[in-house]
Structure formats: structure tokens, C-alpha cells
Length: 293
Length: 340
Image (cartoon, rainbow over all chains, first blue to last red; front, side):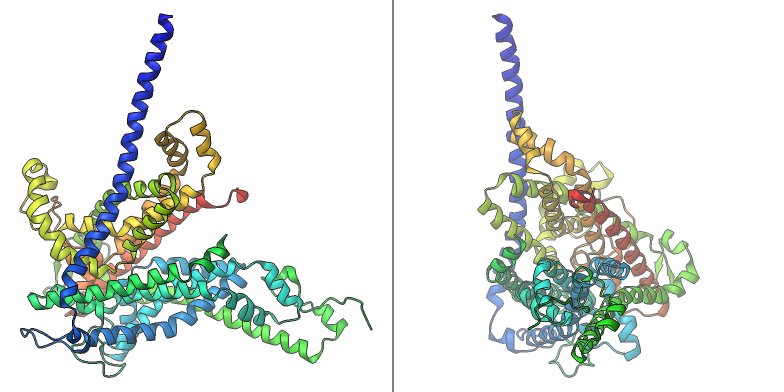
């Protein structure tokens, strides 16, 4: 009798200890998630709080005032970023998508493995290295910083991202769909372009938009390729302003008014990036998950 | 009407990946003009795609070659002493990269040290504890942390994080633990500590999303087994989830490290940019990527430009190796069971 109660006392003491340990770690896990959310809201909240009051018509339509004067805007940087994104997309998207098609449809041999390996390595290259590379590749031969160089460096960053997304999505298309096309006597290129690729279009669009959001915020590769410009865009062989670089230059400047504009620029940039992320998740998500399950 | 089925010699289903044209069948069946056109169009298409793929390999090769070429003058001039000395003097054109290598390693390790427990917690919370809907929303928000551009983190770091560290956190630590060399010296706000925190915020989504992938690869039955034996929630997580996904977690942390090493803008903006090797975490420092970002565009001499290129080359090589190692670890856990 006493032995049994002793035993149960030991068991319940052990059980209590395990319960406490359990609660402690669950609390820690909840805390970790809380800390991450706190960081997000802290950063985002501050950008909204500081940036929103400075958003006005002039911010979107004017170019920077000379140093020391207040007012002016980031219109040139917004336009510049738009131009850079268009240029990098024009090069990076077709290149990336076709590389992805190659990897998924033909990339099973030695060459395929080599290409896949290279794409993986390219994704992990720090973006400032791309800037160094494009500086040697384009800026030195052209003898000046230019919008073209900036666009190319962003394109190089896009290619591996778009290629891997495309490959992953095309792999979800069942083989029998390809076989069905072939059985109808379609040539393989038609099967790939008209059936396989077209069927995954919404998913690929998602990948492309996320890649665009990624390069829209890239600063490091533009520092010594596109450089920056205090005036409106003139031509593609001239330095061009861009939103992230302008935010950077304003942030490290000593002027209060420029800090204010940097916050406003950061708000515009962050809203653009978040909008793309939300859009791709809400609008295009059902199609993608349907393919994945 | 001829109902007999004749196989199309051009199309063999099981050779989808490797288009093989059956030469014998061609001569026997004497393909029509149209089939021949199809055949050439497919050939052309394949070569076109192949060229795209090869160009990516070429791009990687060119990056390596160009970086090496522009780093060559310093490699010749300084040899291995470039990586082991710490003088950085643009006036005399003498360069040593040790302080920036030190800064990169320490700030990244600091970031990883902060980020790893938090990321593991998030991954466990999202995969093992949270109800599905909460998990979806929180998971999305954590991924948003990764979407915020680096320069915005830098801006926040300069105007919010650094002043807060200087006025509150660093005095608090310094007054109590100041006797440890890690926490001695004046409080600048900007410096190694600030860089570590910013890096931690930036790599947390990377580490946690890979950890989630790794946890997902563990079969449900393994979790149920622990619970059925009377294990608590935490015992289930530690015994059947964390224990068997150890290589995957290591891989995730190394991938995070790779990201932290190459991170440029945010670090450049908060680390203070001073090239010195000091024990104190509160002191300003400089990383490989931040020194390139700060000095390359306005480099006064070709030797300086070449020195920065060599730093870039080193960084490039290190990130490639680290990512290769990390991928190997993650792949060991998440690869499909059938291939074992």
C-alpha cells in the first residue's frame, strides 16, 4: 500500500516536472514567434509613421531641390526605378523562363545538371558581387555609369530566380498531359510552349512578379552601375536615379529634410513590395496550390 | 479505311528528355515532308533552349573570370599577405583585408546566434503548435520580413535601432557586464552589435522557412508515436522532430550564414564603417561587402579598385562554398525516402 503511494508520488512529481518543462518551452516558442512579428510591425510601423506625413504631390512629381533647400521630391528616382525594372525584366524574364523550360523539359543529362547547379549558385551570389561584375563588364568599356549597366545587373539577379521558379512549376505538369499533346501529333516545341508553359502561366507570373519585387529593392548592385542622378532621366547611356539608391544617399546625408524624404521613399518601396506579395498570394494562389496538391 | 496503328517514328514517349531520332525507322517509313519539318523545328527549339541554359553556366564562369582578372594586380602584389594583414591605406596604396574579414565573420555569427533560436521557435510554432489559419497568417507575415528591402532595414537601423541601442540597451549591458571585453568601451549605437541585430532580423525568415521544410519531411507517425507513449507536446517536438532533423537545421543555419555574409546595404548603414579589430561588440566595424559599397564607386586608384575586387572575389568564393555545404545538409534530410 505504502509502496504504491510512494510510487505514485514519484510518478506525479516527475509528471509535474515534465508538464512545467512542456509549458516553459511552449512559452518560449510562442515568444519567438511574437518577437518576429514584433520586429515586422516595429519596422513597418515606423516606416508608415515617419513616411506617410511626407508623402505629397511634390514627392511624386518633382526632382530633388539643391542641397540645403527644403521641398522637392523623388519623381526622378521613381521613374528611374520603373525604367530599370522594365529593362531588367526585358532581359531577365525571357532568359530566365527559357532556362527554366530547358531545365524542366530537357535538363536531365550532364548538361542539365551543370545548368541547374550554376543556377543554384547564381541565386546565392551576393548582389553586390553582381555590381562588381557589371562594372567590369559594362561600365569600364563604356567609360561611364549608365542606366544600361544598372538594368543588366538587375537582370542577372532575376535570371536564376525566374529560372528555378519556372522549372519547379513546369515539373508539376503531369507527363500524361505532354503525352496527350504528342499523341495528337503536335511537335514537341508546340507541346511545350502551347500546353505545358501556357498551363502554368499563372504560377510563372507569380514567380516573375516576386522576382520583380526583389530587384525593385536592390541597392547594392546599382551603387556603381547606375550610380544615381539628381535630374530626370535623359538617356539610357547616362547615370540614372533609382529609389533604393536615393533612399540610401538621403539616409546617410546630414540633412533633416532629406531624412524625411528617405522615409517617404522607403514607404513607397515597401508598399510596392508588399502589394506584389499580397497580390500574388491572394489572386494567384488557388491555381498554384491546386497544381501542388 | 486503314485502321492499323502505325507508330510515329518521330515521337517516342519514353525518350522525352532525350530526343532520339530513330534513323532506321526514318528510312523504312519514309517520313512525309511535314514530319521532317516538325523534326527540324524541334531540333532548332532544343538547341535554342540549350543555348539559354549554357548561357547561365557561362554567366557564372564570366563572373568568376572577370572578378579574378580585376583582382589579379593585388593578388600579384600582396599575395597571401592581403588576407592576413590589417593595414588599409589608400594614400600609400597598401591594403590588407583582415579587419573586414573579421568584421564580416563576427557580424554574421552574431546575427546567426540571435536568429537561430528565434527561427527554430517560429518553425516549431507554425508547424507543430499553431492552428492552421493562424499558421498561414503568421507564416505569411514572417515571410514579409524577407520581402522588406535591405535599404529600408538600413534606414530603420540608422534612425531607430542605433539610437535605441545607444541610449538604452548598450548602457544597460555595459554597466552590468562592462568588465567583459566584449561589452567594454563607449556606446556608439552603430557598430557590430547593431549589425548583428539587423542581420538576425533579415536571416530569420530564411532559416525558419527551411526549418519548416525540414520538419515537414518528418513523417506524422513519428510524432504520433511519441504522443501515444504519453509524451508531452514539447517532448514530441524535441524527441521526434528536432532530434531527427538535426542535419537539416544545421543546413538551414549555414544557408542563413551565407545570406548574412553577403548582405550589404543594411549592414553598411549600421556598422559604423571603421576598419579595426576590436574585441568589443559595441565598437564600429566594417564588413567585406560594406567596404566595397563604400569605396568602390569613388576608388581613387586602380590598386584600390583591384583590392576591393579581391575582397569581392573572396566573398564570392566563400558564399559559394557555404551554400554548397548547406544545400548538401538540407538535401540529406528533405530528399524523398525512396531514393535512399
